[in-house]
Image (cartoon, rainbow, N blue to C red; front, side, top):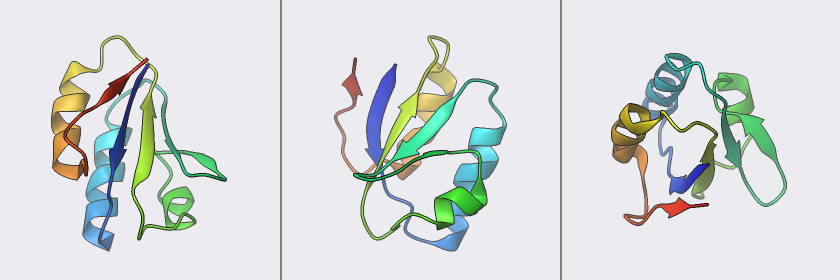
Length: 82
């Protein structure tokens, strides 16, 4: 499992993020203090408070390419691996 924080600060960023997540077959979730949603769902993402960082959870051991592409959305430079 790979976990880090991201920030989706605009509608364009959300659209780009959803396009990115939908190009991978493994589970990707976004979490806040109260909710956990499928990161491939644009409607789900817009239901979250996008003014704050979101925690992303990737459940795959073959996510290196996705993690590299995810850096454009990261708000903290140190990922948390568990």
